[in-house]
Image 1: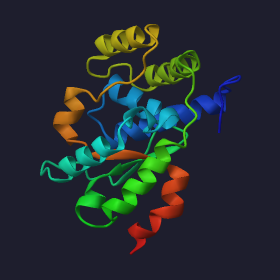
Image 2: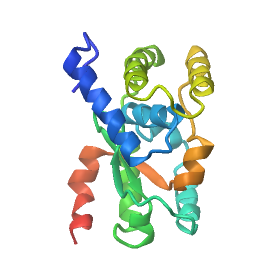
Image 3: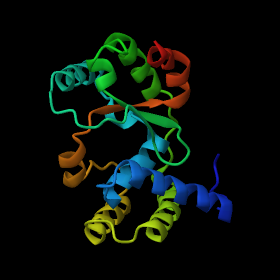
Image 4: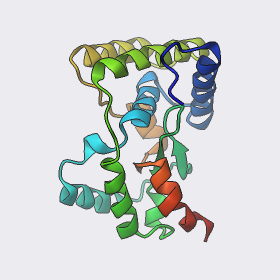
Length: 191
């Protein structure tokens, strides 16, 4: 559903509706948190995995934590939903075996053809204008906007969740391509 060539009114509505959904699901979101979700929709987890052994060890560390507050098990990233945020509770509670998940998580990381930063910046500008239309009074908006703009000017694009989001939801998830999840992992949710 690539819509940026002319970005028609109906396409903007899709983005606006996704912003509303994200704020309904996570009302403590800031601009930074919304940016992260939309960014993840295009880049997936590939930027995180330079060392698979380290990625596995960090996953095991997170599975040992007890501070899971987020109850959303599967959250589509962005507005196209190319990727899901998969709550690690599904692994922690044994719904999805960790080894099976890790295999497809790594496959998912290699499935992305990343956008050049200038292309992402153009897409983000459209998305941000729709965020502004839906919720211009997000907490810390001005500081987040300056931070994101500065990051993009430097050719960077990765952000972390806001402190507010982390304190409210204690997110523990991994990003996995929707098609890979649907084909190989969705059956575990039906058992």
